Image (cartoon, rainbow, N blue to C red; front, side, top):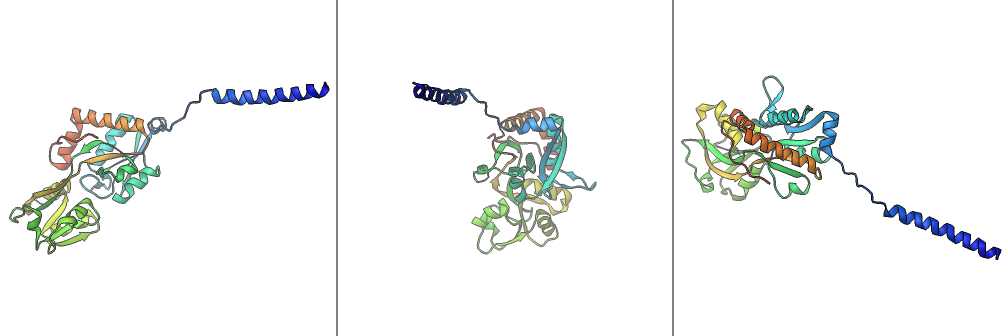
Length: 272
């Protein structure tokens, strides 16, 4: 009888423990998600990547401060959020690594969206106009890629322009690749190359600074509007940025910046 009571007592203990485990599992738990936007508002600061040397999107100005379209857009974002802005100049290759590693909260750096990049980051709606084109003096007759035969073409190595033109350029076209946009522009202005292949905004700046060159668009290689880079999974941040872009487009602020930096009104932009 004593053995029976001991066994029964032991079974009850095990049963009680099992019921506690089951009860704990049955209690609904709330998953905690990271919220970058909330963190930024709490800390009162946002870090935004801008182009290191890609005028008129971003570069060091005469005041030795970074300036350009992207820098002004970054300032508008910080103003609307009511937080301090930390500008982080980056090269093209640093944009995605800086975002995914958390070195910056947002990338506003003349970045085009494509499926490969979308594997690593999220993209906002387009916030800036951009297309890659072939530019040359008015007296040089070029209408199609075939007209580049025998011409000396200057572009920045590794860029979208380089990748796209290299696929279709005539065999006897001489493509000269430079290390950055500043070197490419300098070579064209100095007459070292006949043709400039770059983005429309860069060409607009070159034309404004050197009106005697009579630079004009010959043909468009590829349309590639600029999008902001968002850390993957940050849905609240993505939603806020898209509302910001819509608000500044409808309110005319982005158009004012487009005229200021690109010398042209803001065109209709695609929405992701």
